[in-house]
Length: 465
Image (cartoon, rainbow, N blue to C red; front, side, top):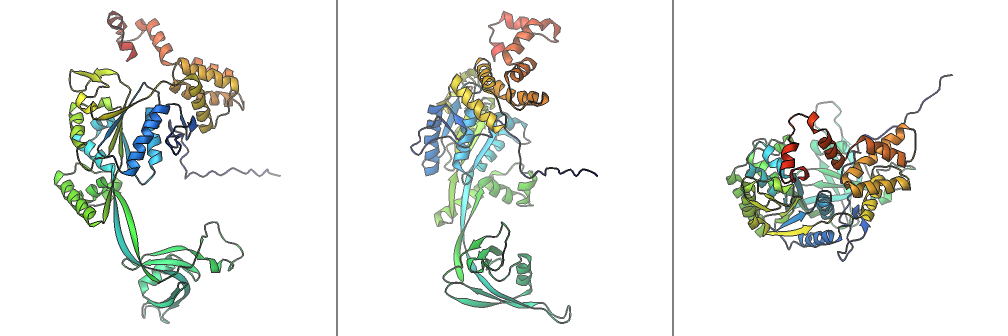
């Protein structure tokens, strides 16, 4: 007798890849903007998180626009994590766009155009529009089909009711087709847009909840609407200024948004759009939502980009600019001058600077606990202590990389929990920066194009850059 094997089926629609900051859910602040020790994936950096929370509150209240914030700190101190926490805390309503400083130079457009598009992606427009709808519970649908096929088009009647009234509507061929497509039947609560004829099923009426003994999980029960059948409803569309720019500058309209071929957009198009949006604001039809633009590795921008940012921040429709860097006093790209963080002094003067501090050993332990949970890795207490020590002596990023590697080593020996021997094994396999540098110094003569002798003769800073 053959053995029947049952294979576990997996849902492939959900993206299950774990990123460096996939554990971040927010800034981890309470209602009075005080940082909690461990909350929403955030650990430590209390002062930086509190400062970011104040900025976040000002953004939500709409009291801040055209301002810029600099997140400055050593590598691996949570600058990008704070920016991601701000994005998650803002929610979907507020536009948040991210780019790296080096992206500007790899796009097929000018640097200033790339920055302008990033700025306009971060400014939202809520367009309000009033539409007339018919909303009610379907009492009966009667469709008269012709006896001879092709003799005449189908006609019918639709009876809708609310708690106050009931009306019969005559149906044409298009409406009958739309009702059939949505699979509308008596007992459904529907909404019909009068302008477009679009039919939306809101759910089943509570009065029909006992019609069937069993129903699918997707069946939603709603109350029968009250008042008039015909109502005026305000619909809000949320778009970004960049989306409006693309739709108005390309012959294929909104399809250009999906193809990604936006290209350079002429200044005249943007001026016309800004004028139109300003008119809508005055009439109360639209509302501007200044979002957030996050530029990581901002020291990679050059002097032309910094000059553009200076001017762009003065625009009345500028978003909140959040930039991050891990550089100290270094050269401004495109010049021979040195400046703090590689940013010109005039732009630095506009920035509110938030600094991040290196993590303590306790904080590294808490972060490693969160990452083990996120990566679904079970680790013994001794292994976690060893990994914490490695993270404190080398770097937090290196310790995080060892989690999955040690879990794979544990699987290989058919273990269930990662032990000290797994950490030791992967520590010997994968070098950190310090051990790799030491190895290079010992075997420098074996490598091609070796310049270690030049480094030894200089000030010794080149190895630490």
